[in-house]
Length: 320
Ligand SMILES: Nc1ncnc2c1ncn2[C@@H]1O[C@H](COP(=O)(O)OP(=O)(O)OP(=O)(O)O)[C@@H](O)[C@H]1O
Image (cartoon, rainbow, N blue to C red; front, side, top):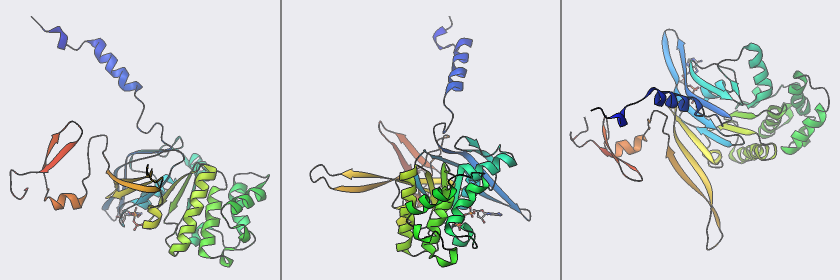
């Protein structure tokens, strides 16, 4: 006699297929969604895999930082998100724009209206022969906006604390003032996302703090989603979420939340580090952890009710 209870019927298969179809896609509710992003550069027959299947989700209204060693892929990712470069494989979308499918016209519109960027080199952000106000008005002019350009430029400069620079050209401003004007330029057309690649790299720590304050103001007052690449630990420590990139992939993430002591009412920021788990179940263990326990090619796993234990392979003493 056959056991019909374990048999899969055609109806079961159809139901499973339709459940898979109806499942929300990866990152469907995120403003920025990078899914297994790959970028390979080929120069003189040598291939460099700058991004090796990077996953990243950023929610609307977030202010977050990206950190990582030199060469880990941060600028490559930023250039892709800025619409200046195209990934080799994977998927990436920002505010509903598919970054792999845009034609030249859509790409231009994307760079003008959807994203704003601030670069490390202060000189790259502003035109030297225009005043601060004219620099901020320029993106609006290029978009064909004729009314209230000067008014909006002035209100952005005021919001970022550099109204006193409105009639000055870049060489008449300090590095910090130039970067704050650069943030105003990036915000001119009301982008959904502001990207900043090492915006405080050329500045001292006090000025860097002021620049970070300007990003926070933009985030809080305009609701702009902001992603900042930084080497600056002080900047990274100011945001709620810092994602670390290692070898072209997101590896760990630090989340910070405000804790209020019940007895004293005192507020403190509690930071917690997490490892990233991708959809295939891959986990990157921090090198310090694996080295401390001499974990090499294999580890033992055990599923407990509320956690998974990971042990070194004791079957061979060296783990080899
Ligand atoms: N246009 C290019 N052609 C060839 N290789 C490139 C190119 N751009 C980046 N790379 C390589 O890709 C890898 C990642 O570079 P990327 O500039 O994204 O790193 P990064 O994390 O921004 O580094 P840094 O902090 O030093 O700016 C590096 O190995 C780099 O040499």
